[in-house]
Length: 184
Image 1 (cartoon, one colour):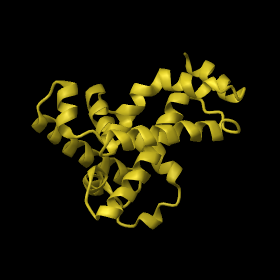
Image 2 (image 1 turned 60 degrees about the horizontal axis):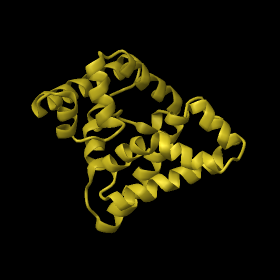
Image 3 (image 1 turned 45 degrees about the horizontal axis):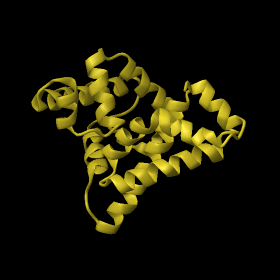
Image 4 (image 1 turned 180 degrees about the horizontal axis):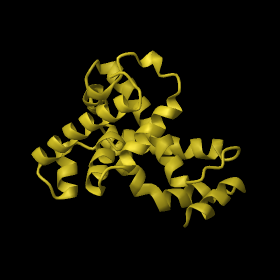
């Protein structure tokens, strides 16, 4: 089914909305959740929670892209679940590794960034300005939290090439944010 048809099912409060969404985006959801969470059971639980969140938030929300909205809800839920799991273990996981990588481009005073929407727009502008392969690598790593080895396999590159590209992109992002007026 198309996004607009799925969205209409949610708006009509048709119970088929969840099963049709699962049929359409189930594999996509597993891709996102499996890259963040340590087990398939956790991924499936998080995906089910995301479907319930869609049911509870549409309406009143009416997202332009159901796929994008689902990805955001699922990713946020998976990150939250991972934080809880890691807090119990006091371990370091994929999220902490990615956050450490992005700290290279972090501002000195996060509290000085009062408009998160502006920062999101800046990062979107940066990503849109990248070449296709760079954009794919950046999004796979920092949105989908894919390990470098997986990105290398999916993009038919060496792991070293992916790591060097990611390092250069973080440096470019840092420079870009500085040019936009953020103290780095």
